Length: 483
Image (tube, rainbow, N blue to C red; front, side, top):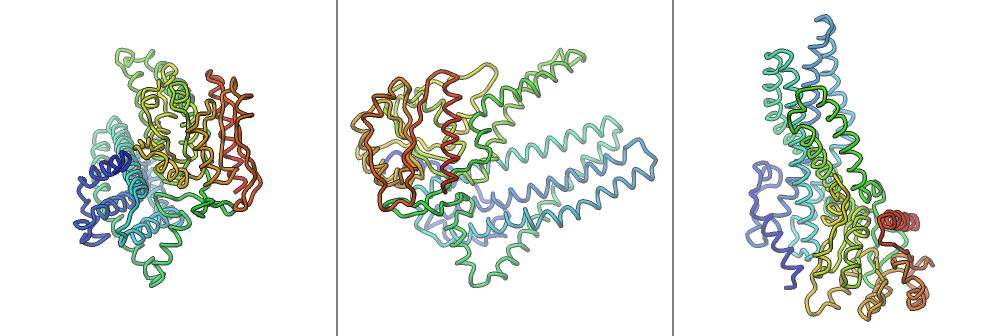
């Protein structure tokens, strides 16, 4: 067992220590398999988290709607108008639910059920599928926890506002919030059972085929990534995934955005408020900015917990401090913004320093390191790297220093991937030398496009990193357009 497999199994063991929720048995039945095949319990836990995510949507809508209805009773209007406004808001909720749930909430429940149906009988998870399973569990658990905290904070804030108006309104709002939290869980469980029953009855004996088609199309949680219609792996013949372009710019430049958000939209207004209030004697502004950063980190993880960014890239680079530092600060944020990936980890990569700016957290690097698997190779590293390249959808190769190992990795990239899915990056100072040394190769008979490999130059300055990120993002956009 190599170090990567050991790390995956260690993460899986940590997941298996979590007890199953009470509702898991009601939805999925009694667990009779996990004793013989432990990963089966991890699948059950993931499915329970997928259903929990949909239930939190229902709880959010009902809770906020009920508290806003209660707040409408305190408007500076006559009692008749206040009652009418509260009743209108409360009546509008079922109408919103009837229009929104079938289009957005029910499909999420159906995908969770198909995910369970597709994996319930499996006993042959590969090490990469187990790694993906670990990712789905960790990302959804973070999302569920953060969502629960945000619901609690929002409800508490509304209750405190009502409490300051009149203590009876505040007490009533808190009682209503606690009651809805209990009722929502039972309502969501009943709704999920109904959706599962209806969905199973509609498809009948064809549900196995429906689940397999959804898995092949990349529509199930854990790998909801569109596939290319034109390109396949040259050896595995699998359809290559497409990069996730939506919001990739925001994820790749998350550090700079966090700087402006925390300072411009949070810290400055709170400071202005504090200077004209007793809050200036408290650490309120600093706490507000830290809370904003914490929420930004959580929201990034929630967004990526949708599992639609499984476009897999592999970063191949020389093992030296300068290349490792640039990889961690500039390359990984872009690769993490369009999907996930793998990079072989060495001591220089672990020790690489993060170049930060004042008052900002490296959110882009944080998000990227959560998406990239730091693979630790064993003595038979060539076989392992060859397998990693075959499983990837794009290869990014730093050719600033062409060693024998890098040249061998380039040859393997051309052996497994179409030319348009290979991206060479090189430092500007070494550009002329590398262009002459790079091996040329005609388009093979297995390719359907004549696009050559891309070559991007970079500089190590702060401005150069920003420009490089933009160029690499544009290359991924071109890859998506080619299909």
